[in-house]
Length: 174
Image (cartoon, rainbow, N blue to C red; front, side, top):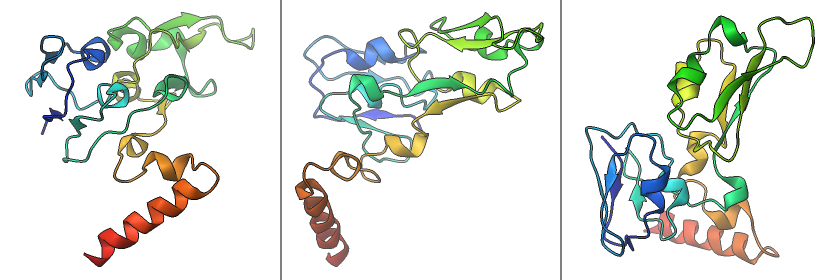
């Protein structure tokens, strides 16, 4: 099942700009639509949606992240084989990955590096790597608002954490 935009969408176009497959369409200030044929369930749209109007592939609300905490590709230097592979570099629709010299000069093949300004955290590189040399941080599970509400991850003076616990207790009692 593809991601879905619900009626609380404000038509800000943030999701359109982040979608690596151009699966989202719509006019400014109107509800947008995700084409289920093009959607790859990456979650890049949900991470930037200000009103949190996007449901993931199992129907959970996606959580919006502050810009400095958006999902981003990370390379494990010890696993990357560099120019012997380049699958992640070739699959990236935003040209956010490139090959650079390895930090240790004896490695002829280099390694993949990430341009954080171009990376959308779409997970295509992570899925293509057969050496587990690249991953997206935060992990996919952290993108779910229902599982990890913002108040639990970043409580303000403990009040947010208390409120989140009360909400969970109330939901469990129902």
